[in-house]
Amino acid sequence: MNAPLAGKAPNILLAAIALFLVVVMPSLNAVGVVSDFMLNTWGKYLCYAILAVGVDLLWGYTGLLSLGQALFFSLGGYMMGMHLMLMIGKLGAYKSDLPDFMVFLGLKVLPDFWQPFHSFPFAALMVVVIPGLLAGLFGYLAFRSRIKGVYFSILTQALTYGAALMFFRNEMMMGGNNGFTDFRSVLGTDLRNPESKRLLYIASAVTLMLVFIGCKWLTNSRFGLIQRAIRDSENRVLFSGYSAANFKLFVFVISAVIAGIGGALYVPQVGIINPSEMMTEKSLEAVVWVAVGGRGTLIGPILGAIGVNYLKSWATTEYPDFWLIILGATFVLVVLFLPKGIVGVPRQIHAAIERRKALKKDRADDLAEITPSPEAE
Image 1 (cartoon, rainbow, N blue to C red):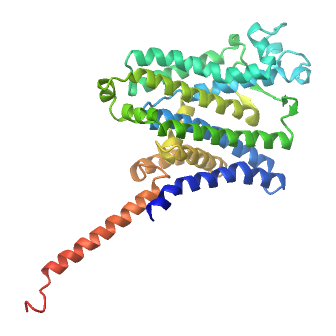
Image 2 (image 1 turned 120 degrees about the horizontal axis):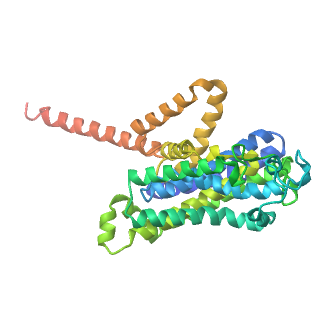
Image 3 (image 1 turned 90 degrees about the horizontal axis):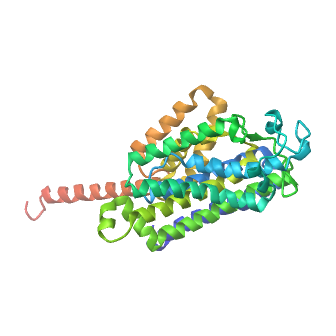
C-alpha cells in the first residue's frame, strides 16, 4: 500500500461509516427493511459511542482513566428526563400536572428547581452545564492536589458511587430507585411514532459525527500535542513551563460535556433513566469499549461501543448466563493479542507480513553466504 493511499484510508473509512449511519440506516428503516426496534437499538449504540469518544479523549490522549464518565452521561440524561417528565402532563397514571412519582410521594406543588425545565432550551442548556460544572469543580480540586494515576480513578469511582446513592433517595425528588420513565413527547412530537424515533436516531448519528470531528480537530492541534505529552511524561511538560493541571481540567470538562450530550440523546430513545446508569460498572464498560476498539484513535471507540453492545445484545439473548464471561474473555484476549484494538489489526497484520519478508530475506542471504560458488569449486 503506497503512502498517499494509506493516508486516505482512515478518511475513507470514516466517510463510509458516516454514510452508513446517517443515510443508509434511516433510509432502510423508512422503506421497512430495518425495523423500528432495530433502529432504536442502534440509536442506543450511537449514544454509547458518543460516551466512548469522550472516554478516549480523556484516557487515550491524556492518560486519565476516569471511572465516573457514566455519572456525567446519566446527569445529561436526567436533565433531559426532567423536561420529558413535565411534558407528560395529565396523561400520566394519576391524571395530574405533577410527575407520577411526585403524586405518589404526596407532593401538591412542583418543586421550584423543576419549574424552569418546562422550557426545552433551558433543559438542553443544563445538559451541558450541569455535567460541565461538576467536572470542573471535581477536576479543579483533584488536579490542583496533583492527584493522578490509580488514585484519580479511585476518586472518580467514589464520586460516581456517592452520586448514585443520592439519586436513589426519594428526598432528591429525582424519581428515586425507579428514576424517570413513561415519556410521551418532546417539542410537540410523539416519541412513540416511527418518524420521531427515526429523527432521534439521525440526531444521534449526526451528533456522533460532529463530536468525532471536533475531537479530531482538537487532538490534531497544538493542544493535542500537549495532551499526548502529558500522557507520556507529565513531568517534562511541567519542566517545559506548561500548566498540566489546566490542560487536564479542560479535557476533563470537555469529556464530561460530551458524555452529558450522549445521555440526553439516550433517554428519549430508551425511555427510562435511573440511578443504576450511574454505577461504576457502566463506566467500566465504557473503558472496555475503548480498549476493544482501539485506545487513542477516536474511530476505535466508536467501533468498540457498537461492536461490544451488539455482542451484548446477542449474548444476553442466546447465552444470558455467560454474558459476563464472554465480555471478560473478549477484554482479556484484546489486551493480550490486540493491544491496539480492532483498529490496529490491519497494522498488526502488515507488520507481521513485513517481519516475515525480512526473515525470509535474511535466511536467503545467510544461505547464499554459506553456499560455495561454482568458481570456488
